Image 1 (cartoon, rainbow, N blue to C red):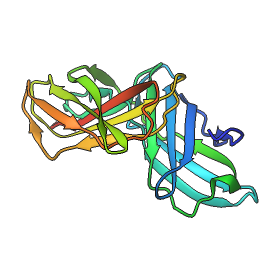
Image 2: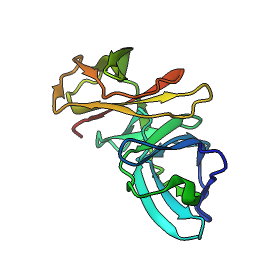
Image 3: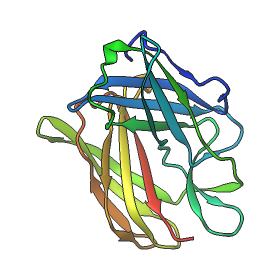
Length: 216
């Protein structure tokens, strides 16, 4: 989306991550980009990002955007350091969002997009201790927000919790993004109750991606 605008991987950058769906739409202040990315590799893709190059119909580079992929999947380095990093497990989907593209980009004048996925392959073990439950939608003005609870199941305190929620259509294409964050510490076994910013279109489902900071 939009139909007919291709978004292909940059030559020579082929790897384990694959773009499976994207939305480029006009937002309140400028174009907004949302993407769903699958890990088709055999190992977790860690600290993954996405870089998108916008090319107009005259073959000129309009702008380049880069940002992180959100998966909600946390891993710990297996070197004994205790460092926790986000990764995308094999076969799983991660999401990306850009709501700060230059406002003067004219979507109808774009010829195509190119993308690449920087990521690391390191020895990690999965952590299934940060969970989100009770997610519901509530009307807020002309839009809808998400509420719920994040629980810290680790045996150490975590800080700076953040929730990113992507409403998706029936085939999993992201339609928007809602976020919530706090400068707070969550002790072992503790919880954080959140309410996100709003989205205009709830789609038919949503993908919730939690992140936290944890000491090594």
